[in-house]
Each structure stands twice: as C-alpha cells, then as structure tokens.
Length: 293
Image (tube, rainbow, N blue to C red; front, side, top):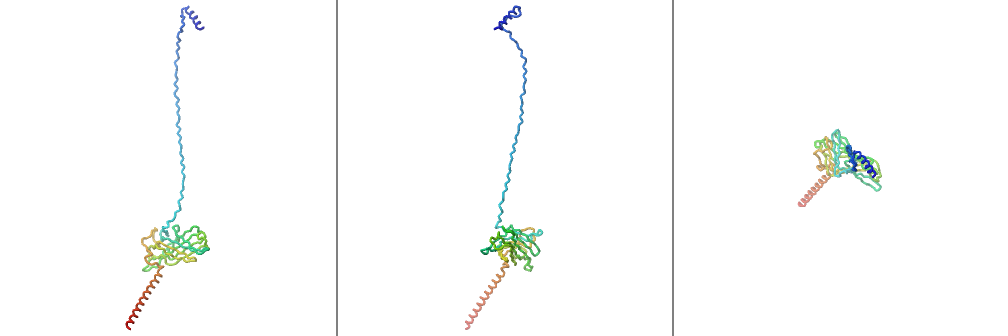
C-alpha cells in the first residue's frame, strides 16, 4: 500500500511537468529473453562388448579292459604237429594221443591219464632215412615237462615195398611229483619205451587210422599209449602242413602187430580141416571093410 502511495505522488509530480500522466496501470515491461541455446547432448552410446563364454565340455574317456576268458581247447579237435627243416615240412602228425601212467600210493596202484593237446610244442630232426618228433608239455603243477618222442625210419626197399616207413621207436619221459600224482610213494624222472614196427605205411603216402591202437611202453613202470584218429606223413617234400591226397588206411591190410595171431589162427583152421578130412576118410574105409565081410 505504501508503494502505491509513493507511485501516486511521483505520478502527480510528473503530470505537473507534463511528462507523464499519472496512471495506475504500469506499462508492461518487455523483457527480451536471450535466445536459449540448447545444447544437444549426444546420447551416450555404451558399447558393451559381447562377452562370449566358451564352455569346454571335458569328456572323460574311461578305458575299460575286458579280460578274455581262457580259451578252452576243443575236445573234438585233433591236435596237429609238424617238423620243418630248412623250409621243408618233412614230418606231419595229426592224432589223438593219451598216456596212461601208473603210480603207487599207500593204498596201492593208481593210474592217471594225460591227453597230448595242441598246447604241446613239437621239435625234431629230418634226415634221409630217419626223422624224429618230440612232443613236449608241462602238466599243471609239474616241476618238469613231459616228453614223447616218435622215431620214423624208412624200411629197406624191395620190389613190393618201396619207400615204406614205420614208427620204429616210441620213448616217453615223465616226472613223478606230489603235485601231479597225489600221494605217490616215489618221485623223480622215469622213462618208458617201445621198439617195433608201428603205423607202417607201404609207400611214401600218409598213414591213417581212426580206430584206437594201444601200444605198451616198457620200463620200470610200464605206460600205455592210446593212439586214435591218426594221420601221419613222414619223409615229405612240401612247404605246407597240408596232407597229400594219397593215404594208406590201417583197415586196408591187417596191422603188422596182428600177423602172428592171424597166422596161428589160420594154421589151426587148416589143421582142423585136415583132421576132419582124415576122420571122414578113415570112416569111409572102415565102412567099406564091413561091406566086404
């Protein structure tokens, strides 16, 4: 209110001098605003680097070792052995062989059998007129190996018997031990052998025989050797273990080991026939004598 009174007094004074009129309305004040400078702030671009996180999946490979079960020999498979000399497979033997070895304990005599399987090793020598094959194997628990040696020889040539061959000698060496022969009353090395003409073949061909043949090996403790399904070829000239197509079977002619019994049988049959004939002739003569009387 005081301000208005002051203004009125001042206006009256101005009117008095004619400069201004007293007006209660204040002249509008023109205010020129300075142009406003707008600063455009560039938008802040935030570049965020894409962080690529590579996760490496570690693959753990577990190596599993599978133990193969022990191979069980096929009981129906016939073991086959060969001897090679300077690239020449000179001797091949395929056969089922079983040895029957006697031993004694506190109760008496016992017999243990051993089959010669494919796990046996074969070694030997080849010559012009003589060949050998030694089969060696170690029974479970035995401190020493067992050896079976076959000796093949050529027979003297003749017009009807050329290049014939036979097994002339069979030798078996073995070791008696408590581990193999429980309760045995003797231990140590023993040997048994046989000499003769076994598995004879009349020519340079293979010898075959399916039936079992038994050979007695003499010694301090005689051993029996059973041989069956045999196919043997000696004095060969070949680079393979394949048998030749030519074979001689044991059933073709009687075995030489049976010649003596057969000869005795034939002789006995002849004597019986002669006795019957003599008896008939004698009866006939007596009958004729009765008729004359």
